Length: 122
Image (tube, rainbow, N blue to C red; front, side, top):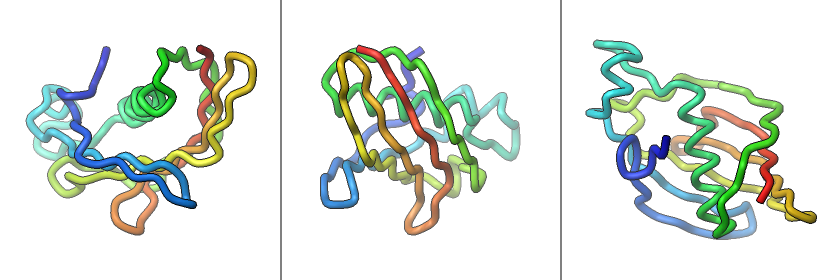
């Protein structure tokens, strides 16, 4: 299930020595937040990982299949009402044969909310 343009939209994209960053805006009206959890919605961890996958596909300009997600650390709760603008920064993106690897940091301002390593296959 694609989440882009429903759960989130991309508001900007930048590249610098720290990596490639997509800034996204969460949609607090998305049906996922009605179920997780009504009255106090939070972004499910699986959605945080799916967004990383979709953005990595965009960065690589290729359809990717996730083969491994490791070293996942959820450091803070991501809420759509408080944390409307979220940065996904991709660092150490490497391509070897048909494998793409990246370290991803999900942050709001200077605060890291999640960190994960993603391995995909083209």
